[in-house]
Image 1: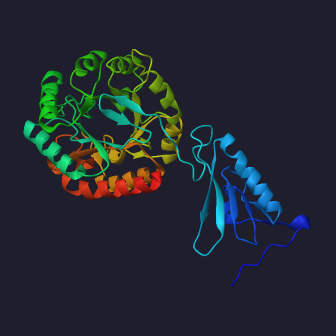
Image 2: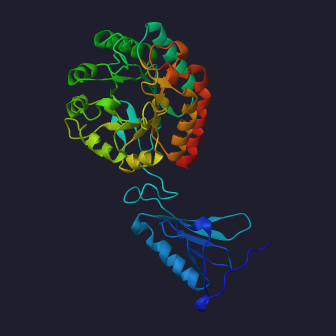
Image 3: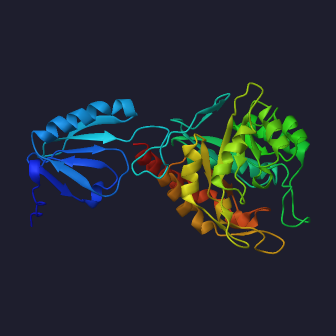
Length: 377
Protein backbone atom coordinates (compact mmCIF):
# COMPACT_ATOMS: atom_id res chain seq x y z
CA UNK A 1 0.00 0.00 0.00
CA UNK A 2 1.36 3.40 -0.95
CA UNK A 3 2.02 5.69 1.98
CA UNK A 4 -0.38 8.59 2.30
CA UNK A 5 1.21 11.96 1.61
CA UNK A 6 1.03 14.62 4.32
CA UNK A 7 -1.50 17.42 3.74
CA UNK A 8 -0.32 20.26 1.54
CA UNK A 9 0.45 23.54 3.23
CA UNK A 10 0.57 27.01 1.68
CA UNK A 11 3.58 27.59 -0.53
CA UNK A 12 3.96 23.94 -1.46
CA UNK A 13 5.51 22.99 1.92
CA UNK A 14 4.67 19.66 3.50
CA UNK A 15 5.58 18.68 7.03
CA UNK A 16 6.17 15.12 8.19
CA UNK A 17 7.90 13.24 11.01
CA UNK A 18 9.67 10.23 9.50
CA UNK A 19 11.38 8.21 12.24
CA UNK A 20 14.29 7.32 9.99
CA UNK A 21 15.45 10.92 9.60
CA UNK A 22 15.02 12.21 13.14
CA UNK A 23 18.73 12.86 13.51
CA UNK A 24 18.85 15.37 10.67
CA UNK A 25 17.27 18.50 9.23
CA UNK A 26 15.60 16.80 6.25
CA UNK A 27 13.98 18.25 3.14
CA UNK A 28 12.20 15.95 0.67
CA UNK A 29 10.93 16.65 -2.83
CA UNK A 30 7.96 14.39 -3.46
CA UNK A 31 8.14 14.94 -7.22
CA UNK A 32 11.56 13.33 -7.65
CA UNK A 33 12.07 11.50 -4.35
CA UNK A 34 15.38 13.20 -3.56
CA UNK A 35 16.36 13.91 0.04
CA UNK A 36 18.68 16.48 1.54
CA UNK A 37 19.92 15.47 4.99
CA UNK A 38 21.93 17.96 7.02
CA UNK A 39 23.95 16.29 9.77
CA UNK A 40 22.79 18.35 12.73
CA UNK A 41 20.81 16.72 15.57
CA UNK A 42 17.23 17.96 15.93
CA UNK A 43 13.86 16.69 17.15
CA UNK A 44 12.30 14.04 14.87
CA UNK A 45 10.55 16.39 12.43
CA UNK A 46 11.23 17.45 8.86
CA UNK A 47 10.13 19.94 6.23
CA UNK A 48 9.33 18.76 2.73
CA UNK A 49 9.65 21.38 0.00
CA UNK A 50 8.37 21.11 -3.55
CA UNK A 51 10.03 22.43 -6.68
CA UNK A 52 11.35 24.93 -7.30
CA UNK A 53 11.64 25.95 -3.67
CA UNK A 54 13.37 22.75 -2.59
CA UNK A 55 15.96 22.82 -5.38
CA UNK A 56 17.04 26.36 -4.59
CA UNK A 57 17.01 25.75 -0.83
CA UNK A 58 18.85 22.43 -0.86
CA UNK A 59 21.57 23.72 -3.17
CA UNK A 60 22.07 26.74 -0.93
CA UNK A 61 22.24 24.56 2.18
CA UNK A 62 24.63 22.13 0.53
CA UNK A 63 26.91 25.01 -0.50
CA UNK A 64 27.19 26.09 3.14
CA UNK A 65 28.14 22.65 4.47
CA UNK A 66 31.95 22.87 4.03
CA UNK A 67 32.16 26.05 6.12
CA UNK A 68 30.55 24.12 8.97
CA UNK A 69 32.93 21.20 8.69
CA UNK A 70 30.30 19.04 6.97
CA UNK A 71 30.35 17.39 3.58
CA UNK A 72 27.80 16.83 0.83
CA UNK A 73 27.63 14.15 -1.81
CA UNK A 74 25.22 13.01 -4.52
CA UNK A 75 24.26 9.40 -4.99
CA UNK A 76 21.76 7.54 -7.14
CA UNK A 77 19.81 4.56 -5.92
CA UNK A 78 18.69 1.93 -8.38
CA UNK A 79 15.64 3.24 -10.22
CA UNK A 80 15.52 6.47 -8.23
CA UNK A 81 16.71 10.05 -8.78
CA UNK A 82 19.98 11.10 -7.11
CA UNK A 83 20.11 12.10 -3.45
CA UNK A 84 22.13 14.89 -1.88
CA UNK A 85 23.33 13.92 1.56
CA UNK A 86 25.13 16.16 4.02
CA UNK A 87 27.27 13.92 6.21
CA UNK A 88 28.26 14.86 9.75
CA UNK A 89 31.99 14.63 9.25
CA UNK A 90 33.37 17.13 11.73
CA UNK A 91 36.03 15.70 14.03
CA UNK A 92 35.44 17.97 17.01
CA UNK A 93 32.81 20.16 18.62
CA UNK A 94 29.89 17.75 18.80
CA UNK A 95 28.34 15.31 21.17
CA UNK A 96 29.91 11.83 20.99
CA UNK A 97 26.41 10.39 21.02
CA UNK A 98 25.32 11.98 17.71
CA UNK A 99 24.10 9.30 15.37
CA UNK A 100 26.08 8.54 12.22
CA UNK A 101 29.05 10.57 13.48
CA UNK A 102 32.55 9.12 13.28
CA UNK A 103 34.94 10.05 16.06
CA UNK A 104 38.54 10.58 15.00
CA UNK A 105 41.21 10.20 17.67
CA UNK A 106 44.71 11.63 17.66
CA UNK A 107 47.60 9.54 16.39
CA UNK A 108 50.20 8.51 18.98
CA UNK A 109 53.57 7.33 17.65
CA UNK A 110 56.74 5.93 19.12
CA UNK A 111 59.32 4.09 17.07
CA UNK A 112 57.49 1.89 14.58
CA UNK A 113 54.25 1.86 16.60
CA UNK A 114 51.28 4.01 15.64
CA UNK A 115 47.96 4.06 17.52
CA UNK A 116 44.76 6.00 16.83
CA UNK A 117 43.47 7.94 13.86
CA UNK A 118 43.53 5.80 10.72
CA UNK A 119 46.17 3.43 12.12
CA UNK A 120 45.53 -0.29 12.19
CA UNK A 121 43.87 -1.70 15.29
CA UNK A 122 46.32 -2.23 18.12
CA UNK A 123 46.20 -5.72 19.61
CA UNK A 124 47.81 -6.06 23.05
CA UNK A 125 47.70 -9.69 24.10
CA UNK A 126 49.50 -12.32 26.13
CA UNK A 127 49.41 -14.13 29.47
CA UNK A 128 48.70 -12.15 32.62
CA UNK A 129 52.09 -12.87 34.17
CA UNK A 130 55.38 -14.40 33.07
CA UNK A 131 55.23 -18.04 34.18
CA UNK A 132 58.04 -19.69 32.23
CA UNK A 133 60.05 -19.27 29.05
CA UNK A 134 58.12 -22.12 27.42
CA UNK A 135 54.75 -20.50 28.17
CA UNK A 136 55.95 -17.16 26.79
CA UNK A 137 57.10 -18.74 23.53
CA UNK A 138 53.91 -20.78 23.14
CA UNK A 139 51.76 -17.70 23.71
CA UNK A 140 53.79 -15.54 21.31
CA UNK A 141 53.73 -18.18 18.56
CA UNK A 142 49.99 -18.70 19.00
CA UNK A 143 49.30 -14.97 18.85
CA UNK A 144 51.35 -14.49 15.69
CA UNK A 145 49.42 -17.30 14.02
CA UNK A 146 46.04 -15.95 15.17
CA UNK A 147 46.72 -12.42 13.92
CA UNK A 148 48.52 -13.40 10.71
CA UNK A 149 47.11 -11.55 7.72
CA UNK A 150 44.62 -9.53 9.77
CA UNK A 151 44.71 -5.71 10.15
CA UNK A 152 46.18 -5.64 13.65
CA UNK A 153 49.43 -4.32 15.09
CA UNK A 154 50.33 -7.03 17.59
CA UNK A 155 52.08 -6.18 20.86
CA UNK A 156 52.97 -8.98 23.29
CA UNK A 157 52.04 -8.43 26.93
CA UNK A 158 53.11 -10.24 30.09
CA UNK A 159 53.77 -8.84 33.57
CA UNK A 160 57.14 -9.36 35.21
CA UNK A 161 55.60 -8.59 38.60
CA UNK A 162 51.91 -8.65 39.55
CA UNK A 163 52.08 -6.39 42.57
CA UNK A 164 48.30 -6.12 43.00
CA UNK A 165 47.28 -9.73 43.61
CA UNK A 166 44.23 -10.51 45.75
CA UNK A 167 46.33 -12.48 48.24
CA UNK A 168 49.92 -11.79 49.33
CA UNK A 169 50.56 -15.51 48.86
CA UNK A 170 49.63 -15.51 45.16
CA UNK A 171 52.26 -15.93 42.46
CA UNK A 172 53.63 -12.56 41.30
CA UNK A 173 56.11 -13.43 38.57
CA UNK A 174 59.91 -13.57 38.18
CA UNK A 175 60.48 -9.95 39.22
CA UNK A 176 61.81 -6.86 37.47
CA UNK A 177 65.30 -7.87 36.38
CA UNK A 178 64.62 -11.48 35.42
CA UNK A 179 61.30 -10.56 33.85
CA UNK A 180 62.72 -7.80 31.66
CA UNK A 181 65.49 -10.13 30.56
CA UNK A 182 62.93 -12.71 29.45
CA UNK A 183 60.84 -10.10 27.63
CA UNK A 184 63.93 -8.81 25.84
CA UNK A 185 64.75 -12.35 24.68
CA UNK A 186 61.19 -12.87 23.49
CA UNK A 187 61.23 -9.56 21.64
CA UNK A 188 64.36 -10.63 19.78
CA UNK A 189 63.05 -14.15 19.11
CA UNK A 190 59.57 -13.21 17.89
CA UNK A 191 60.13 -9.74 16.46
CA UNK A 192 57.09 -8.52 18.39
CA UNK A 193 56.96 -5.27 20.38
CA UNK A 194 56.45 -5.95 24.10
CA UNK A 195 54.69 -4.28 27.01
CA UNK A 196 54.41 -4.80 30.75
CA UNK A 197 53.26 -3.01 33.92
CA UNK A 198 55.38 -0.49 35.80
CA UNK A 199 54.49 0.12 39.46
CA UNK A 200 56.99 2.79 40.55
CA UNK A 201 58.90 5.64 38.88
CA UNK A 202 62.10 3.63 39.33
CA UNK A 203 60.61 0.65 37.50
CA UNK A 204 59.45 2.89 34.66
CA UNK A 205 62.96 4.29 34.23
CA UNK A 206 64.44 0.79 34.15
CA UNK A 207 61.80 -0.69 31.84
CA UNK A 208 62.26 1.91 29.11
CA UNK A 209 65.25 0.00 27.73
CA UNK A 210 63.11 -3.06 26.96
CA UNK A 211 59.43 -2.15 26.67
CA UNK A 212 57.86 -0.57 23.60
CA UNK A 213 54.76 0.43 25.59
CA UNK A 214 54.82 1.09 29.33
CA UNK A 215 51.55 0.12 30.97
CA UNK A 216 50.16 1.92 34.02
CA UNK A 217 47.94 -0.42 36.10
CA UNK A 218 44.35 0.72 36.59
CA UNK A 219 44.69 0.96 40.36
CA UNK A 220 47.74 3.23 39.93
CA UNK A 221 46.43 5.49 37.16
CA UNK A 222 46.24 8.53 39.48
CA UNK A 223 49.84 8.21 40.65
CA UNK A 224 51.15 11.25 38.80
CA UNK A 225 54.81 10.61 39.58
CA UNK A 226 54.56 7.13 38.06
CA UNK A 227 52.74 8.38 34.95
CA UNK A 228 55.22 11.23 34.50
CA UNK A 229 58.21 8.90 34.88
CA UNK A 230 56.79 6.55 32.26
CA UNK A 231 56.25 9.51 29.92
CA UNK A 232 59.86 10.62 30.27
CA UNK A 233 60.91 7.38 28.60
CA UNK A 234 59.61 8.59 25.24
CA UNK A 235 57.69 5.32 24.91
CA UNK A 236 53.94 5.10 24.44
CA UNK A 237 52.23 5.06 27.83
CA UNK A 238 49.12 2.91 28.14
CA UNK A 239 47.06 4.21 31.06
CA UNK A 240 44.44 1.72 32.14
CA UNK A 241 41.36 3.58 33.36
CA UNK A 242 40.76 2.91 37.04
CA UNK A 243 37.60 1.03 37.89
CA UNK A 244 36.70 4.02 40.07
CA UNK A 245 37.38 6.71 37.47
CA UNK A 246 34.83 8.64 35.40
CA UNK A 247 35.55 8.69 31.65
CA UNK A 248 35.86 12.50 31.65
CA UNK A 249 38.78 12.25 34.09
CA UNK A 250 40.97 10.46 31.56
CA UNK A 251 41.91 13.76 29.92
CA UNK A 252 43.78 14.73 33.10
CA UNK A 253 45.51 11.34 33.13
CA UNK A 254 46.74 11.97 29.60
CA UNK A 255 48.01 15.44 30.54
CA UNK A 256 50.08 13.81 33.29
CA UNK A 257 51.82 11.75 30.61
CA UNK A 258 53.52 14.60 28.76
CA UNK A 259 57.06 13.72 27.74
CA UNK A 260 60.24 15.83 27.69
CA UNK A 261 59.03 17.58 24.52
CA UNK A 262 55.65 18.39 26.07
CA UNK A 263 53.84 15.83 23.91
CA UNK A 264 51.67 13.21 25.59
CA UNK A 265 52.33 9.90 23.85
CA UNK A 266 49.60 8.21 25.83
CA UNK A 267 46.62 6.00 25.16
CA UNK A 268 43.76 4.90 27.41
CA UNK A 269 42.43 1.42 28.10
CA UNK A 270 38.86 0.82 29.25
CA UNK A 271 38.62 -2.22 31.51
CA UNK A 272 35.30 -1.85 33.31
CA UNK A 273 33.84 0.10 36.23
CA UNK A 274 32.98 -1.16 39.70
CA UNK A 275 29.42 -2.47 39.82
CA UNK A 276 28.94 -3.33 43.45
CA UNK A 277 31.23 -5.90 45.05
CA UNK A 278 33.14 -8.46 42.97
CA UNK A 279 31.74 -7.23 39.67
CA UNK A 280 32.48 -4.84 36.80
CA UNK A 281 30.35 -3.28 34.08
CA UNK A 282 31.18 -1.47 30.82
CA UNK A 283 29.59 1.81 29.79
CA UNK A 284 30.20 2.32 26.08
CA UNK A 285 29.02 5.92 26.33
CA UNK A 286 32.17 6.42 28.38
CA UNK A 287 34.31 4.85 25.66
CA UNK A 288 32.80 7.25 23.12
CA UNK A 289 33.42 10.18 25.48
CA UNK A 290 37.10 9.30 25.92
CA UNK A 291 37.58 8.95 22.17
CA UNK A 292 35.70 12.20 21.51
CA UNK A 293 38.43 13.94 23.53
CA UNK A 294 40.88 12.71 20.87
CA UNK A 295 42.40 9.99 23.09
CA UNK A 296 43.21 6.69 21.35
CA UNK A 297 41.26 4.12 23.33
CA UNK A 298 41.83 0.39 23.78
CA UNK A 299 39.16 -2.00 25.02
CA UNK A 300 40.26 -4.65 27.52
CA UNK A 301 37.67 -7.38 27.03
CA UNK A 302 39.19 -9.92 29.42
CA UNK A 303 39.63 -7.75 32.52
CA UNK A 304 36.13 -6.41 31.88
CA UNK A 305 34.74 -9.86 32.70
CA UNK A 306 36.91 -10.27 35.78
CA UNK A 307 35.21 -10.73 39.16
CA UNK A 308 37.67 -8.88 41.44
CA UNK A 309 38.40 -10.91 44.56
CA UNK A 310 35.48 -13.14 43.66
CA UNK A 311 37.21 -16.30 44.90
CA UNK A 312 38.34 -14.90 48.21
CA UNK A 313 42.08 -15.35 47.73
CA UNK A 314 41.91 -14.81 43.97
CA UNK A 315 39.78 -13.09 41.36
CA UNK A 316 37.16 -14.97 39.40
CA UNK A 317 36.06 -14.36 35.85
CA UNK A 318 33.50 -15.06 33.14
CA UNK A 319 35.58 -15.48 30.00
CA UNK A 320 32.57 -16.65 27.99
CA UNK A 321 31.33 -13.04 27.84
CA UNK A 322 34.60 -11.49 26.65
CA UNK A 323 33.95 -12.03 22.91
CA UNK A 324 30.52 -10.38 23.11
CA UNK A 325 31.95 -7.31 24.84
CA UNK A 326 34.78 -7.11 22.31
CA UNK A 327 32.30 -7.17 19.44
CA UNK A 328 30.25 -4.45 21.12
CA UNK A 329 33.37 -2.30 21.48
CA UNK A 330 34.24 -2.80 17.82
CA UNK A 331 30.75 -1.70 16.85
CA UNK A 332 30.95 1.37 19.06
CA UNK A 333 34.28 2.38 17.54
CA UNK A 334 37.64 1.62 19.14
CA UNK A 335 41.37 1.97 18.42
CA UNK A 336 42.48 -1.43 19.65
CA UNK A 337 41.92 -4.40 21.91
CA UNK A 338 43.55 -5.92 24.97
CA UNK A 339 43.21 -9.65 25.64
CA UNK A 340 44.80 -11.87 28.22
CA UNK A 341 45.35 -15.20 26.50
CA UNK A 342 46.95 -18.44 27.65
CA UNK A 343 47.76 -21.82 26.08
CA UNK A 344 45.99 -23.48 29.04
CA UNK A 345 43.76 -20.99 30.91
CA UNK A 346 42.54 -23.55 33.43
CA UNK A 347 46.08 -23.92 34.74
CA UNK A 348 47.19 -20.30 34.38
CA UNK A 349 48.85 -18.93 37.51
CA UNK A 350 47.05 -15.59 37.27
CA UNK A 351 43.65 -14.51 35.88
CA UNK A 352 42.88 -17.90 34.36
CA UNK A 353 39.07 -17.51 34.72
CA UNK A 354 39.03 -14.49 32.40
CA UNK A 355 41.79 -15.59 29.96
CA UNK A 356 40.82 -16.46 26.39
CA UNK A 357 42.20 -19.77 25.05
CA UNK A 358 44.57 -19.30 22.15
CA UNK A 359 42.63 -21.83 20.09
CA UNK A 360 39.55 -19.62 19.78
CA UNK A 361 41.28 -16.30 19.18
CA UNK A 362 41.61 -16.38 15.38
CA UNK A 363 37.87 -16.49 14.74
CA UNK A 364 37.24 -13.65 17.20
CA UNK A 365 39.90 -11.46 15.58
CA UNK A 366 38.36 -12.06 12.16
CA UNK A 367 34.98 -10.95 13.49
CA UNK A 368 36.44 -7.84 15.11
CA UNK A 369 38.33 -6.89 11.95
CA UNK A 370 35.12 -7.21 9.93
CA UNK A 371 33.09 -5.08 12.34
CA UNK A 372 35.83 -2.44 12.46
CA UNK A 373 35.89 -2.25 8.66
CA UNK A 374 32.16 -1.53 8.64
CA UNK A 375 32.48 1.13 11.34
CA UNK A 376 35.36 2.87 9.58
CA UNK A 377 33.33 2.85 6.38
